[in-house]
Amino acid sequence: MQLVVGRIGRAHGVLGEATIEVRTDDADLRFAVGNAVTLENGKKLIIKSSRWHNQVLLLSFDGITDRNQIEELRDQLISAEVDTSAMAPGEYHYQQLIGSQVFLQSGDQVGVVGEVVKLPGQDLLSVDKGGSQVLVPMVKQIIISIDVAAKKIVINPPEGLLDVTN
Image (cartoon, rainbow, N blue to C red):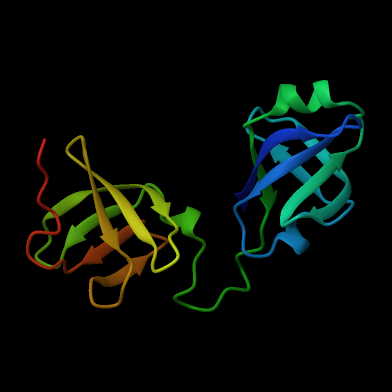
């Protein structure tokens, strides 16, 4: 399954290296030399070099030799093939949650997951609730069940969590 693993940032140097905003927990595996990645415009790139510099991932790609070519790709999301078949029951990639319907235990629909916000303390589901955004903490006390195949999440929020003021 193709999953977003990063975003191309600014050019680094003049030889076609790009800074990468990493969006995967296994950057060394996903961005290994020789791996193929796909840009959101459908273009496929092969990683020519991969290195860390001051805690920033730098990549270069076959066929890209200068900073101008990298600047043309700036802000594009990078996807890679990720094997989800080896995941244990109950495990999922956050991107598999995007587009999931969120329901209360009573069966009432809350909205649709638009993104997963990763924070140091806990992650949040950003749920579109009738045009407004509500943030639902991804904690066991609130998330009752996640069915990735059915794209359905059942929650038990504390009072006031879903209140939206426009």
